[in-house]
Amino acid sequence: MSEKDILKGKRVLVVDDEPDVLETISDMLDVCEVHKAGNFESGLKMLLNNHYDAVILDIMGVNGFELLKNSNARGFPTIMVTAYQITPEALKKSIDMGAAAFLPKELIGEIKELLQEVFLGGGKRLWWLKSLEKTGPYFDRKFGSRWKEQHKIFKEFAKSKEPN
Image (tube, rainbow, N blue to C red; front, side):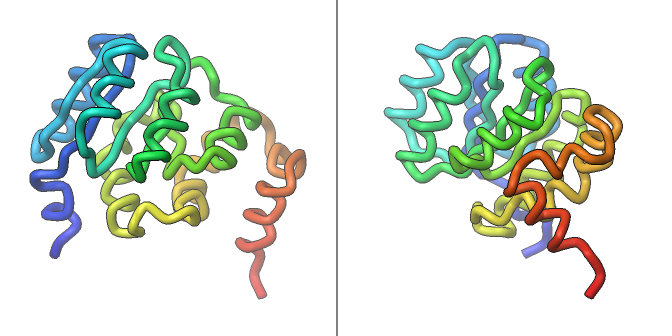
């Protein structure tokens, strides 16, 4: 199965309080069956009453971390996206809570490729090793080149990338 085919027909829930973000992601994932929710309540209802191959959650505006708990409980690989909670702490919390990926909205153009990677990786917890290869330079510019040294999980990532 090609990377392009892996998305075809997948059921994806997108929860974001910004209608333009919902439409943008839906357009980018045109080969998927995309369900959209614009607030916490409708997002939670959809999470609890449907099966999804993946879930994409905004952090702010829709209580994304609470939705992440529910998504994980249902076994749905979940990508966290945000425009305002772009901090090492939000990234760490996403990882600790079991998110499959974390993507700043400034990089939303990467969502299709990132979702493909999540599916190809089986939604496993090691997502961020590959994901952070792509988003790491963004975070380096945003937080400074030494941001990974603040938390054990990021130190382990940096160490795993050192040449043997």
